[in-house]
Image (tube, rainbow, N blue to C red):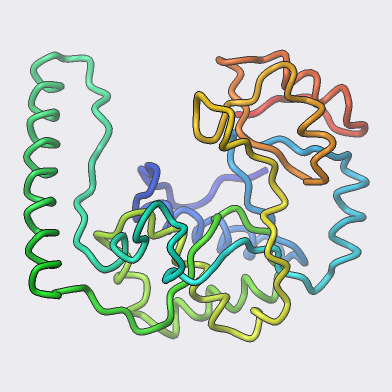
Length: 255
């Protein structure tokens, strides 16, 4: 485990999420390079032992595990193209404990939201959509990539300096950024379109569900190698149960 040189105030759906993942890849590459780069969050757990994990990726040395699809397919929360072709503001979380500051931030957020809606109506009325130079693809940003693919992504960003800034003022651009690069490259021929992650978007109350005691069987029988999301504030017992059922894993719990 090591710390990256850069850090970002990264929130869900923000531009900084892209910067954070790129920094993780660069930092890992400097320490490596490695044959396999597995991207997981602090709320993920392995569903298999370390030995099974190594065996799985050893059996697929040239496979990119990326779940994605053409952005023109209407399955990304409505018309997903709007998240890339319209102008979006960034909304910071209101974490201040001072009531006056919290009120000011709420007013700012509401004002930006109203302005954003007006800009969207104007863009749609006159067809003033933000252009994009490549066919766009979207999907889960939890990917398991080969070292060769990660090298290609990092070189692509350097060789195409306008690509990264294009994702400023987008919504959930992190779910388009990497997929568009990969699906428009020769690595598309090496894809297996599975996220390798178990997640429950149906049961709720969260989306995805914060897994609880009783979910163990569904997780461990899913055939996936990771599961998400776990939250020890919601249910710490399920975390212990998963570790108890997967041999060879040290039970540190999610961080």
